[in-house]
Length: 334
Ligand code: NAD
Image 1: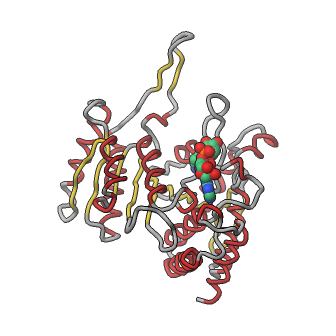
Image 2: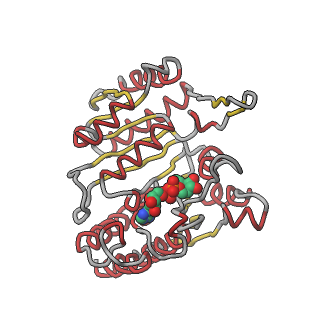
Image 3: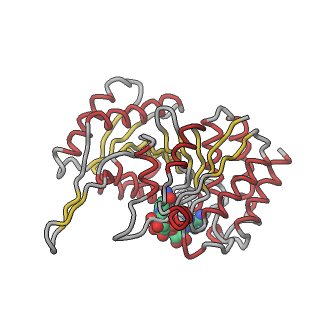
């Protein structure tokens, strides 16, 4: 039996966590959930959105499944999501985006993986006001973190028989910071001669992703570009409702959808549980339950392909719980 820390999160998070738990239970994997409260509820009850107990639980169990957590805009506490990744040194954010039959999008046959550096860049949280009319945010890029993330991308490519890694940067303008990232990426690429390597400037990459997404495979990049491009990739395959993610460190891992807490839908049983369920499938892979993970993916794909019990974003009228129940029903037949 495996114990997994479950953080239900804010906004639509609790509905999505319930959906993922329903599906994992239908997959008959022996998992015990250890609940840990972070975000708005923790702030109200305990005066902090990230109580130390949450970090302790993840450190103990080594694996967590997490719903989205709201971050106040412009003021208030810093992001719990960023804090979790940094505190637990979950240095790699893995965000696969793959076309699925039954999802209406102009883009076909997409199979991309965004590997986003998760611990530094502008997310280091070093910002200050310079008098009343100016502000500075510091972008940090280190050789060590760049090497770790680029190696992660190449190791992922090697393990999953991917043929190309593209490093994404803005080294033409940010000559020192992104220049260092690119220099390290080129060096690391030399250790993986069987995998093609190329680089793209982030603005060009954004256009290429919309015009020729099939030309790309694994994309590796600093934190901010990864945040933005992973939403573009989600859009290519049907939207944030179907985009899963994993945050991976040396010993710990936390699985969560790419999307946020969608506050306008909170409590309405409306949003798509697929991103959360596919994040749980990535978690099963990580736990060595690859067979169960592939059953969860098959059942999710089957329900989407049928198109009858799917949520509004996929053109259906089903609620979150109903779509999860449809996936669970399918799983029981597999
Ligand atoms: P969002 O991802 O919550 O929503 C963006 C759009 O996508 C909205 O139209 C929303 O309705 C839609 N959407 C999101 N999830 C969906 C789903 N499962 N099914 C169908 N449609 C879905 O982004 P936002 O509005 O920019 O952010 C809301 C809050 O979430 C903010 O506080 C932000 O900081 C936070 N956030 C958290 C995480 C995280 O927990 N990892 C990630 C991103 C944003």
